[in-house]
Amino acid sequence: QVYLVQSGAEVKKPGSSVKVSCKASGGTFNSDAITWVRQAPGQGLQWMGGIIPRYGTTNYPQKFQGRVTITADDSTNTAYIELSSLRSEDTAVYYCATGSRVTTGQYYIHHWGQGTLVTVSS
Amino acid sequence: DIVMTQSPDSLAVSLGERATINCKTSQSVLYSSNNKDHLTWHQQKPGQPPKLLIYWASTRESGVPDRFSGSGSGTDFTLTITNVQAEDVAVYYCQQYYSTPYTFGQGTKLEIK
Image (cartoon, rainbow over all chains, first blue to last red):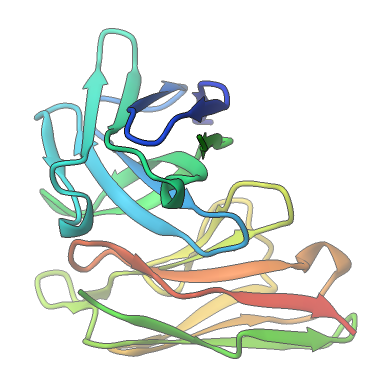
């Protein structure tokens, strides 16, 4: 069974950055992908990008290019997402999830973390 | 980007009845290299993270009750829940992994009548 444990809630000022961690256990961290999805209050799910730790390759949606960075440390089975230039619209629960790879670059979202609430407020 | 449109936005069914949720994609998610549809269904219960129910459009994840089934191909997909139970109250999302950015439907809220 795969477990993903995320870091705790954050409160940030507009214009600052936030970094959320996601520690995996029980799975194949190095061969799977790790992906991040966010959910604004009362809203749906939005994919923010992913990384394949074995290759260090990342993929981000155009909407977040330049503002989001996803990294992974395979020595500790931990992935991170950093979002910069925060604005109020970034207030959301941020989920990490494993991605079961189906081709070199494609994967389906499989096991989800518990989520981390990030609040952006002055 | 592939746009995912679910219908209805919400539905209420009686216990033991059938619920049907539809998902339409703006382009085909059938991948020619493996002849599989790159589509998942996720269930999100109140206050919880989502949970994978179905992948490859119709393959149930391990441990998911067999009253959940997925069907469809190309651009039109359906999640069917037979014999609806109280614990099935949730929001259901379809999601494509055919091309990035991966995209989700807007969600369908299932309630008990």
